[in-house]
Each structure stands twice: as C-alpha cells, then as structure tokens.
Image 1 (cartoon, helix red, strand yellow):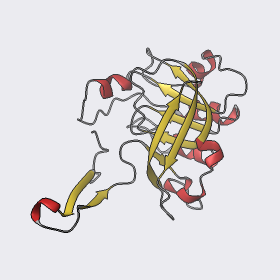
Image 2: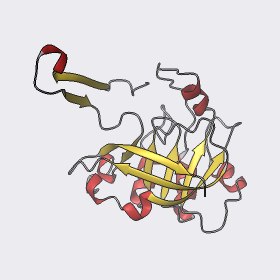
Image 3: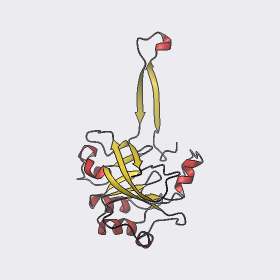
Length: 197
C-alpha cells in the first residue's frame, strides 16, 4: 500500500514460528501510526492537543454521509456547499478520484491526490461537522501547509484518513471506526466499516 514519503511504512514479521519448531506462531508489528486507514489525534498538529485515547467513540460510531466528488482536484468550501448535505450531517466521508488508486492497487505514493483546502476545512468547522473522512493518506493536499489539519483539529473534528471507498455509492451509512487505543499517540491505525441501513 502507499505510504507517506519518509514513513517507515508497515512491517509484520514472525518472531516465533510453528513450522520452525517453536511452540507458537508469534508476530511483531513495526509501523508508523499514520499508515493505511487511520485517525489523526489533535496532538498530531496542535501543541496542546489531546491524544488518540481521548477521541470520542460517540463521534467514531454513527450515521455518516458519503459524498461523491468525481470532478474535483481539491475540495473547496464551494464544492462542499454544492453537496447540499442532508440536514444534521455530522460525519462526512469524501469519495474522490483517489478511490480509483485503491481500486487499481496503485502502491506508489501519489503527490497529486485530492484533498481539502483550508477554506473547505473552515466550511466543515462552521457547519458543525464532527468527523471528516478522506480516501487518501491525508486530509490536506501534499504541497499545502498544515493549516487544513490545524483548522479541523482546533474545531474538534476527528480526521479519518486512508479510507478505501472503492465501489461505495453516495448516501447515508452507519460508520463504525475503531482506532487502536494507543495511549499518548498522535494517530492510530483503524478499522472503518460502513453499514448500509
């Protein structure tokens, strides 16, 4: 899978092996916490921000709207306004052309992925969104400053990155997102599931 440039990526290897005569199979995991599907905690970009264990399960589990944006290169406030989100939407997942990268098993990191602009992040904060999910490794564009992350995290919005929304149609779902509870961590790999209700 693609990993952020400079990341050590993901490694899973056996430290004990039944086939080698050991009494059990035991594996070791060595990974960046911002790899694959993962959440960002406020302390990822905010000096006084909280860590993963303080993220609210009430926000990570519940109704979510998947919006399909096939034509945009960057998700702006104007793009979000045009979505005409259902009333009371608090969890928003953005499906873009990034999902085609997952569908085509592109493992090389793509610097031109679609993500939010800072004005898009401010729009989400102003509208009371509590969780934003994106279909690539970052909610902000590769060449942008950290302002997009900062706006979202200061507003208390949980960021869910690295979603694979291949073959997920637009509409309402139930989101169940359970990040690993890594105490003190700035991020955590997560299992995110959408259930059509």
